[in-house]
Each structure stands twice: as structure tokens, then as C-alpha cells.
Amino acid sequence: MTSLESSLLDSLASWRSAPAWRIALSGGLDSTVLLHLLARLREREALPPLSAVHVHHGLQAIADTWPAHCQSLCDELAVPLRIERVQVDGGASLERAAREARYAAFERQIGAGEILLTGQHRDDQAETLLFRLLRGAGVRGLAGMPLSRRLAAGWLVRPLLQVPRAQLEAYARQHDLRWVEDPSNADTGLARNFLRHEVFPVLARHWPQAGASLARTAEHMREAEQLLAELAEQDLATVRGSGAFDWLNLPSVQLQPLIALSEVRQRNALRHWLAPYSRMPDSEHWAGWVDLRDATVDAAALWRLDGGELRRADGRLWLLSGEWLQQPPPPAAWTDPAQPLCLPGNGRAQIEGVGPAAPLQLRYRQGGEVMALAGRGHRDLKRLLNERGVPAFVRGRLPLLYRGDELLAVANLPGLDGPPSAEWQLHWLPPTNAQGLS
Image (cartoon, rainbow, N blue to C red; front, side, top):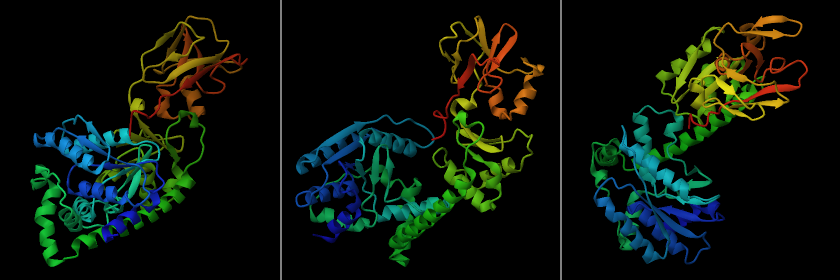
């Protein structure tokens, strides 16, 4: 067994029991060598079933020949191939749009527990580190590409990250492999290509081990990132916890335990909390967190993020996105109170129990509303909401049940959500953040 084969098997040792291995086959050098290596190893090793996936973007005329090339290669090695054709949306970054379309196609192909294998190598890792360093990335960014990460219901694994490109090319020459070259890889107007063709050759002349050293630095950064993640989990454990408005089903954390931490630990905890929902803000944009944190209690402060915003209310930080950032719908007539009422952009409402007689209408707070309470007379709705500490961002979309000009109930608030007899209650299922941050 060659050293390259041994290295590959070592990298994949944890994934040998997966139901399937799928190779992301572009037709380039890296993925071609990966496919050939695995096809050979399959002959003498018990490996999961192999197959390949080629994503065709159709962005260049020459790329139209690549699916046939990949099919021919897979036919020679008796590896099934699936060709996925995708439409790339134009925009500020065609490269980013193509990548998003490519990985969306991969996600459609990956079943539960299956592995997608990609051919990124040590030189790619070094380029990634230097590229992100020049963009001012933090520890998370400088950790480079991880060996593995979740992908849909399965995993993405990069088993060649410790292998230099020169070793892959030597293997390809030795076995007379054919591969395609993407013409865009020669365009030094693209930042990564400039690093690859103009910067790295100069570095290598002075520091022959530059690629290996940078890749090793990425490993150190990844270890540091793991330590920061563990610290963040410890800190987040102290700021999570239930509150009176958990029924909103929105991401939230307690504010006071968070601001009791040092500033660097605040940012570290917030980065890890926000990571599943949002791209991280750059260093200058973190001033928005300071403004939000230090705002007075009665200030309507918020911190806008990529596609969403953080707000303070009820002693907590709330993350809003999707329909929560839109205006609630206009008032709606409720002709059949026995059936739930869909509120476009604002979830749905229903009356639990034997509800009041129609005609009914659902409205939203405009100001000046008054509600009659048993034993208390008429009370301003604003005061009632203040007494219950209802977050300000909820008040304008909290459903109010009216019959004529009489306010009968305020959804979800005990004592206000129906009559004292409790024969019925107004229940509201709020919208979710599903259309927001990702």
C-alpha cells in the first residue's frame, strides 16, 4: 500500500461504517485522483458503496464537455455517476453563487449518515488561511477548512487536507490519469488565483515549507477555536433559561448574566449563539452590540445583523428574523370562531372552548385601547401590557379579539385571554424565524 493510500484510509477511518461514500467529482485533478484512489482501494478493502456526483453549472462553454468526461472516467472505474445540472443566480459574486448552487445540489444527493468526499488538499488549506488572514478574519476563519462538517442529513469530509498538490499530481502522472482544467483558475484577477499563481511561488522560494506551515497554523487555530467554543458553551449555559415568553419560540438569552462577562467573552458567547442563524459581523459592526447592550431600559434599541436583528426586552436578548421583521396583517373578520384563523405573516389564532358569538374581528394595537376587567373596571391596554412585561416588539402583533367596539380578549395573556369563567380562551401561535437567518 502506498503512503498516499495509507494516508487516505487513515483520514477515512472514522467513516468506514457509513452507508455510502459519494465523491464530489468536478473532473479536475484533485477529485479525479480521489476517485481513482478509492476505486483501487475498494478492490482490497471493505469500503462503503462508492458513487460520484458531478454538478454542472453551465457557466462556460468548455464546461459542457465535463459531464461526458466525468461519465467516461466513472465508466472506466465502474463507479456510478449522478450528474446534477444547476442554475446559478447572477449577483455581486458569481463564484459565491456557484458554490451555493453546488452545495445545494450535494445536499439533495446526501442521504442519512452518508458521506460526501471532496478533494481539497493541503495547498488549498494554505491558500484559505492566507486569503482569510488578508481579509482580517478571526480565529474561526483562520481555522481554515475543517476535515469534516455536517451536510444535510450526512457529512462532508475532506480526506486529502494533509496531502500536498504535488503528491496528487505525481500520482495522476504515474497512473496516466486525465483531468480537466478550469480556465477561470488562470484568472489572477480573482483573489485566490492571485495567491496561487503570484504569491505562493514567491513564498515557496524563500520558505519551501510555507504550504505545510500555513496548514499547520490552521490546525492550531482550529484547536483554539474548539477551546473558545467550549468556553462559549459554558458561558451560554449561564444565560440560557426559561422566561415568561418562551411561547414566542424565538431564540433568546438572558441579558444580565451576559453583560456580567468581560467584553471579549460577551463577543465570544454571542458569536457561538448567533452562528446557526447569521453570518458573523465584522469587527467594526460589533459597535452595534455595544450600543444595544448599553442602551437605557426604555430605549427601542436594536442591532441589525445579516437578515435579522437583535432586540432587548423582558430582560433578554431576542433574535428576530423572517416574518417578525414585517408588518402584521390588517384586521380580519372571524366568521367561524370554531375554526382557526390564519393570519398571513403572523401565525394563526384559535379560540379554545366555547367561544363568544359572532360577528368577531381580530385587530392589532393602535393605541388608546381600553378593556373591561371584572372587579377593576376599564383599564388602558397599554398599562395592562406593561404590568405583564410584554416585550415591545410583540405588542403591535399580539392579536386582539373584538366584537364591535368591545375588546373581548388579548391572546396568550392569562387573565386577559378570555372571560373570568374561562369558558373560552384566545390562543395565538406566533410566526417563526424560519424565513430569516441561516
